[in-house]
Length: 82
Image 1: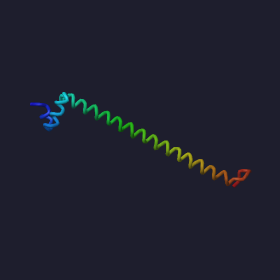
Image 2: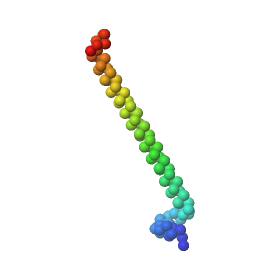
Image 3: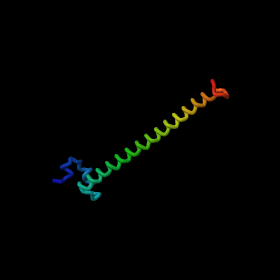
Image 4: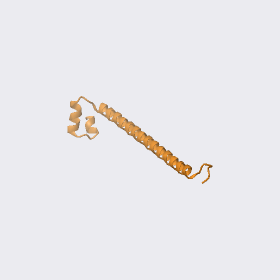
């Protein structure tokens, strides 16, 4: 009994793997490695996007704080009274 049949692979797909010279074990290892590479890439992409969002939020907060402090100083006279 072939391992391809054991895993329920279609005959056409099994033939394709066999024509490429890839055994069942090798195919499973390649697919597992591919899973972890994609998982790692997605995780890093999400972390990078989150950092950019946080940086933008910090810039916006800083800009808003500066605007508020500028408004307060505009209303003060020379002696610091409103």
